[in-house]
Length: 299
Image (cartoon, rainbow, N blue to C red; front, side):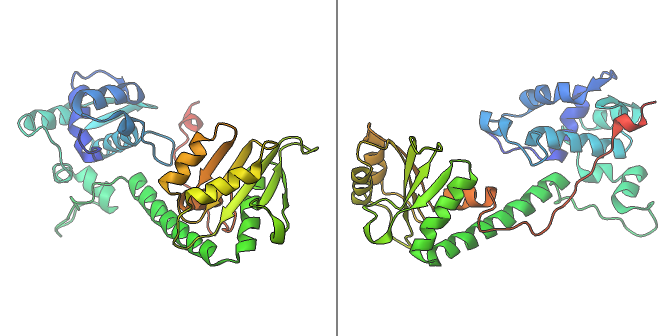
């Protein structure tokens, strides 16, 4: 299995596929090019970027964009592409290398104008060959870095918060997720139960919650056994949440309890859910990404 190809590594396969001069629907040939030229796992094939496309298709689209900016292919109509004489000539010159680089595209004035915002001058124009990420890749990388930072900071905050308030945060999260109204148990005599969620108005279907705000220790088999014992036979569903993680013995104990369905949520999963449902975080900035509305120009 190879790494996911960069967009510049897809340029030669794309030209090679359409070299017969016919018009092709990029969406229709995307998977075919992927499977013929690249050995990707099923997981890689399904990997998506934030715009909703698979990562491979997104990079193929950018390969098409860069080739068109160098006037090596023609976008005949929405979603369709066709090679031209310049593209065929470049393809034939690359039969041995079977690779087209950004430096190859830099030989075309139209591409330089696209990259630099102006036509080539007497000054040397440098194309950053190492910049093989698409703009979408860079956007995704930036957002992922922000998410990792926020998740880490949020987990640290949870480990510092008052344990009783931590229990309430967990109940607030489940309510935001649509599990229903909740009630907090008396702190002095909760019997191993930190909260009760009512999934119906009359409280006939209930979920018990246990929240452990651990800074270092993991949830052990004893913690899980106590929670199961507190659930008894009246309630069959439970959430066990911790800021740390679960020992294998605790996971096995929950798994082997056939009388209850217990969902385990560790610290990593907890902050992911909190960010998704805007619990403990707020939206700071919203960015808009725009694209051409092709239908607007159809008379």
